[in-house]
Length: 80
Figure 1: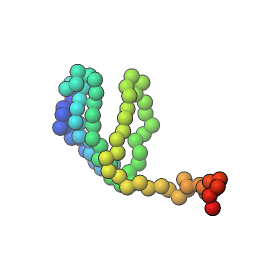
Figure 2: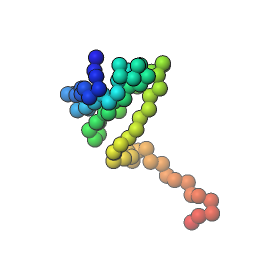
Figure 3: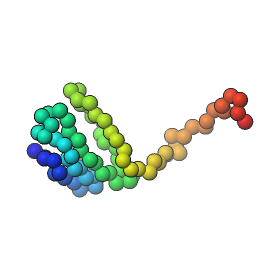
């Protein structure tokens, strides 16, 4: 089992995961993992944690919006 400070690297995707807090160190209360993902990497596969809550915090990123996702904006009433 990974302990605090342990790192796992996914050679296929280039993702690097570092365990900051584990269930063993928090009496099962939480798991905190820092994930470093290369630009353009695929998002995580769809998954669920039925007995847990998952939160994400983006520390540093460059947002990219695919053009196909941008829709023509509706005019705002009262503005030219």
